[in-house]
Length: 162
Image 1 (cartoon, one colour):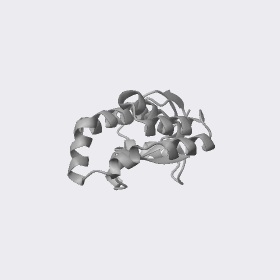
Image 2 (cartoon, rainbow, N blue to C red):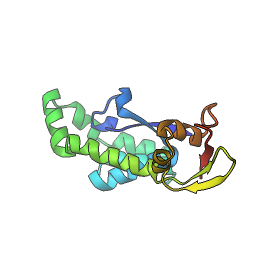
Image 3 (cartoon, rainbow, N blue to C red):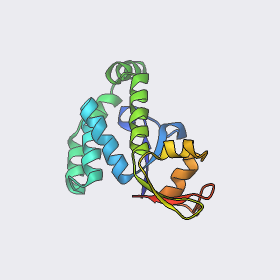
Image 4 (cartoon, helix red, strand yellow):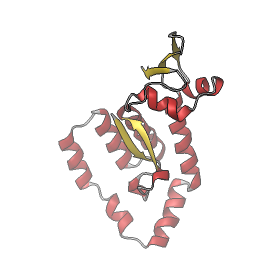
């Protein structure tokens, strides 16, 4: 199952703009929030991580979210003050760079079983590098490996994440 994940989380002002969304598996999504929680110590990231990974159940998640007041904190300040606090608290563009680096690490470090056009099976740890070395479009190859579309191959290469 693929989740749409906000590069800048909605709980700190991220939008639903396509440039702020990436597709991650449930496991990648949980791991992204775990890393964000460890780095920034935001309760929302902790709850997202624990909920997505099954550490806490839905009832506990709802209870925690309803008792958490940071949403009110961000909604009760002026827009100018909000942006100033967001940039100060989360490093502004540094946060975006850190998160994109995390995302690329997660996506590139997944192990994949690649089937070559000749039918050979290869186990690849860094899909992005494999694509660069073989002149394959990385985005298209990720689509094939995820198996969530009708596309079965990319330039004759098929496979799946393992």
